Image (cartoon, rainbow, N blue to C red; front, top):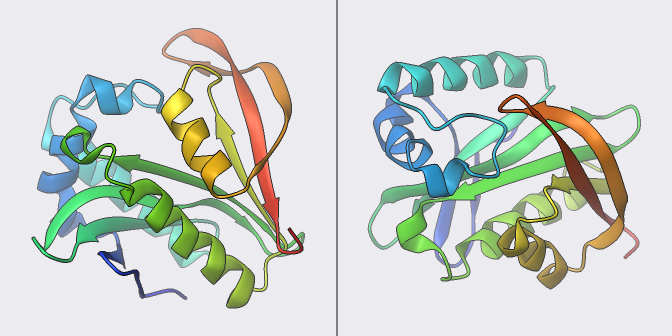
Length: 176
């Protein structure tokens, strides 16, 4: 399937276990994981486990996750990808995270736009979805900047960190 995607400032490369140290640094930050469906990591083995799990999903074309590498520094600054791929219905759900030190630099919209364009132009998908906690205003701004449409709120639809949470659904269609 997908090997590499490039933007003006970023290289999106399929995540590997070799990325675990860099990703652990990101996923151990409580500010980064605040709105993720994981608790902040406390050891690198947790990063290795999730990467191995995601790799298994990618082998079945169910999902694919990328490490986001800043081209000038050649450092991993986050991750993004298709959390689920549904080729029968020509849709995918996306997710993303950026290291706190790189917030506010436009990296998230740049990375997500490359995922959206690849999904529409190469994977022949019709719909991209994102589910976001209503309090995650920064993520909502990213989606709105990329012309995603707010569709509604799924009330208490997931249990995260022992609490049922609402998720707002945003989408973008190939025809948008």
